[in-house]
Length: 272
Image (cartoon, rainbow, N blue to C red; front, side, top):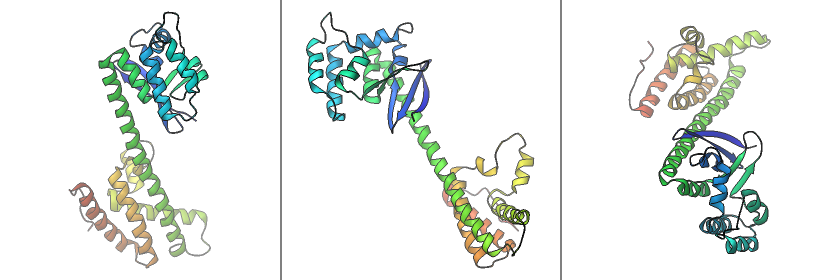
């Protein structure tokens, strides 16, 4: 399934999609920079240019093992002639091209892989191309940042499962009810919350009634890294039979030490 995004370049909304890990930019939207009424006509004029046909053919030869070079040669010989026309659909069908794709429908249009989209933008305006590259790079940087945060959050969830398994084995008496087990889990989660954030989950919710989710959803990446480490350490301490109060002090000291390393500053005090 294609992943869809949108960037704004000089007040023009430009759609992007990612298909099987490959990024495409909507050149129909790019063409609106030159002619907002007839962007398809702009693309057609670009594609009938001999330099464009040669560029597309060379790009496909490099990146597409299924490219049809015979059809490409036919287009290259005709390119530039007054009667020559070439649409994206005709190019794709005849040459088995992969650098350009067409999507029909309300949110459709002609999309091109980034090399081709940037080349088309240069034909529109060199200045516009530079802005397009800048905004696209910003989009990719934000996606990578989000991916990193998500990975840390998932790591924290995995370690939390390890942590709760240790609680079940060493803190929960036999024959307890599910409700009793949940209370014990909540207390252990709050041990980590107090050690890391200085408050329990309930205290955070009461202090932030307008926010959705929980305290860990608003943690920084460094806090999630530290919290992930603490969950593993707490599981070991539980296995060793160390009382909850002692573990809280140890975990708080570990949190301060690790955050000092991660952020080169300490914003937390040791628990007394």
